[in-house]
Length: 321
Image 1 (cartoon, one colour):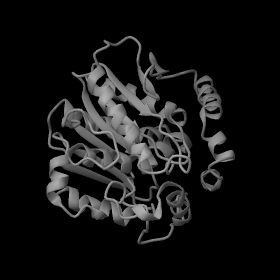
Image 2 (spheres, one colour):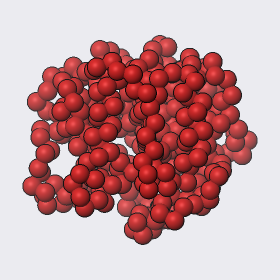
Image 3 (cartoon, one colour):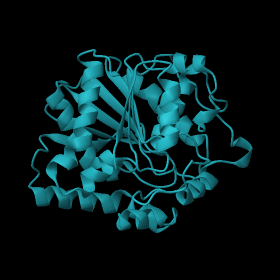
Image 4 (spheres, one colour):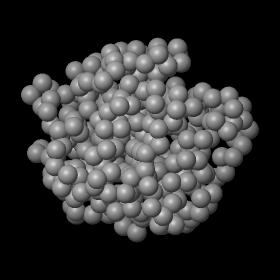
């Protein structure tokens, strides 16, 4: 946990981007695979998309027509992180989706630009362009908007943009929505929290203020496309809600726990949604425990919960509530 707090304290333009970037995490990924003998990795591979900045994680031996594509928007406050730091987690998730019954699952992780060089709404525009591209290239797939932390905030913003476009952002070519949404510890806003920090969580109000100052100009601090508490219209949420529902997962020890529960209180009025608040867990716990937990069952608990609930929504058609 001390390591995680130190990593988040790094300045975004120097050591932070190096530590969270491609080179460092590719070495880490290869080391972890070598140490484990690549057990349970199967034939899952990753590669860059030739058109849109992003990384595909998928199975080599499966059919090319995907039955599910997770369009993943990664966290990091729009100032750090990269898709490469998620490779081990995503490889495990693709394998788990296979086990749930999906024939050919794939994950596309968007490589968005960083603030402060590219402030809001640049990342929302990149997500909209990528969504247009993914629909065109894979029209038969069941799409899931997914993200962790600030990326989950971006996923919800993109849902809102589909039905009521944000000024200055590329409009989506069709009004087709994803089948479902997967939200790991979404940031409901970029401003405040009921609690500044918690003893066990690495993410605090200090980090939030820093990222907000990089990402958002003062003139835009009330935009509903990043501050979800500004969306007071239930009809807007209902128009934007995925047909098969949402799965929201968070830790009760994280700073935004109360705000996430309030967001759930609004979303549950608009469509089918399931929320899992894991006791004594932290921000984006499925990802952090996958890297840090020693017990194999604990490491895989978040991955299994995600795959199970996506299977319920998209294969079995069960109500996720």
